[in-house]
Image (cartoon, rainbow, N blue to C red):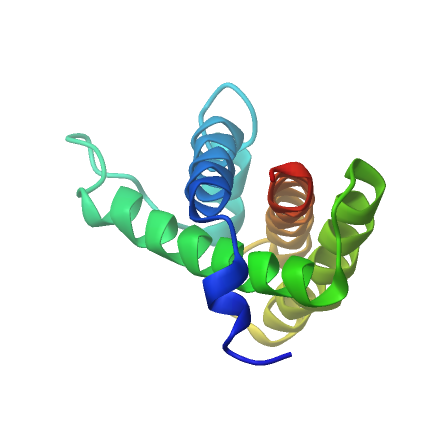
Length: 140
């Protein structure tokens, strides 16, 4: 793989994949799903006026970088079907996101409930990266 893969990725697919990952996060970490349990597991107290705008922008930038990297891997590996994208997302999700969340959970003694934090965070990133992998693989 080389940086030449950047010229071969479908940039519209990258942007849509990053936005899908971000939208999943908005739902995942909302009070409707896991937001309250995740906040409790981290020990974070949300201010009454709500989070600052950077709390929304920073993840979007991160998901864009993840979508670009996953898109480059899709180009380099020839992933061009739903099945290829599913496997790519699982490999990237388990290989990086889940493992890094696990290491963080083990070594971050400041979280009141690191195991709960791990499961919520790891499952979100795994699902998000599977969605990214599928989008960047099937979108020609």
